Length: 313
Ligand SMILES: NC(=O)c1ccc[n+]([C@@H]2O[C@H](COP(=O)([O-])OP(=O)(O)OC[C@H]3O[C@@H](n4cnc5c(N)ncnc54)[C@H](O)[C@@H]3O)[C@@H](O)[C@H]2O)c1
Image (cartoon, rainbow, N blue to C red; front, side):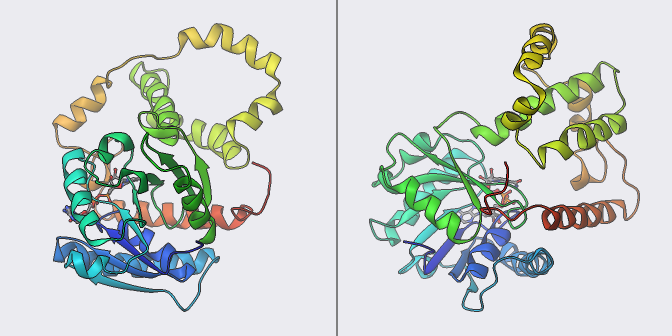
């Protein structure tokens, strides 16, 4: 199997439209299902935006792919070859949606969940054929970040991860294979970074703005070119050993959330979605900031070697 002829995406909120765009541009007939008609209407405009970003990035764009929108699950799943579940991150909801999905698809159809970290083995309990179920964790925005975590559960069949990696490669993305571990690798690394950053700001060691400048240029820029393993080889493992010996014991290992974050959450200041958070956003600032971020994502993507090009990692 290379790219599935028909792909069904179940759940079309933040992630669904970008995922749909990637499959369709590679040539799949994509069906997007959601229980909410409003969500599907929003998904249509989101899809247009994703298409415009993808036109700017370049990469795959065949004319044979299509996207259709559905509120009837049976219609969205009939004869489908591959399912991506992207409903909200609630285990009971995912279990009930996937049990429904299974009623309308052939026994061999792979069902992949975009869960951010709910154990695949736990979700699979709802399935009659758990061997065809696997984690397929896209990174947000899914039409821009060309990397997918492939995470089999305990009952996932031996060949399923290989088939999923083949599909991911068929639409031009990198795939990384992981053993099941709470939160999956990308979020574990991100949350380790976030914990230390928040601790430093909370202690008053550095301001929010300077923390972002330090991490963006000092770490982010490097990590866009080489991963942490290569970075260690560049730095020298002897240097790492010396620094880690005094620094590791001093790093934050708190299990909690710093009070300045919980205070903001209590006040309803949740970030860009509520126009207030760690930074302040005046009238029009959120749209402007989001626009600028997408512009920079596109510029950086275009300057990086294409995924699967064999360039240095
Ligand atoms: N948002 C992110 O940054 C991000 C990144 C990676 C993975 N994920 C994961 O992707 C999944 C979806 O996240 P999201 O941010 O797109 O969520 P979202 O809340 O934006 O969208 C979920 C969509 O699912 C729909 N839905 C709810 N119940 C449904 C049902 N029974 N059948 C079909 N559709 C239903 C909702 O109407 C909504 O449109 C979650 O598991 C999340 O953890 C999210």
